[in-house]
Image (tube, rainbow, N blue to C red; front, side, top):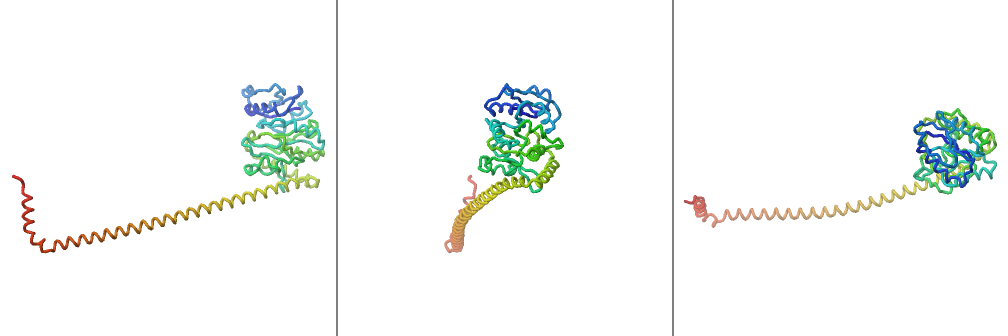
Length: 352
């Protein structure tokens, strides 16, 4: 077995190399890892090569996925090629399972796996094609990842698939060298084209194996690149091939129907969650409305009480004023006025 990887980042490459140890139960002395190194010589010194399988930098050229992989495949010695991104972390036993499929199913041309990101959400479960032939990730995990159960029955169904991703792909060396990656793509698409070429030129089908698993954070190596023209080119290949082979269209339909069933269930689930959220919101609004009504009653009661207290205080003030006026107008008050005047004057004199 020969593992082929392209890298320029030692931290990613070291992580992938470390995962290889458990990815296969028994590594053979002839097994190898061939690397196309695109990074600096300083970073190259930071590579932590495993003892098994044997690691070797087989080329140091500018990055071009298809061309780099084709050169590595020419130098590989293993009967099986593992094409793997440096940002993939392989799960224990996944390469043994891929090798078993190729050994027992001669009609299978290459094997792709079920990938998830670091948070555990699905990132790849095979590739399908839209009506215009353009490829897309089955179940569209890039948009719907949080909604899809990565261990759901639909995701775990394995079988012949129109295409799988080149992030993790296992293929017989003889088959790969008879096809090779097309080097006409600038950014992406060569992996899908290889799947189509495998089917049309070798009469073998790509195979999605849900138990060939790994972690892959999408585009953590390549980043976001302008891939529109490459995808359109793949779309033209798909349309030409599907027009010639109705059995391939039937394979598309099988997975598309399964996907649509899952999408329908997701819609029902979201609708139920939306209705539940709406009911909860209505109940909360009802509770808030009842609370406001109670507060309004309390405010009305307090206001009525304050008005009553104000009116009572006003009546008392009027009564007191009337008593003062009556007192000022009374005969006794007038008769004692001279005496009060003398008292006030005596009280105002300074003490000798």
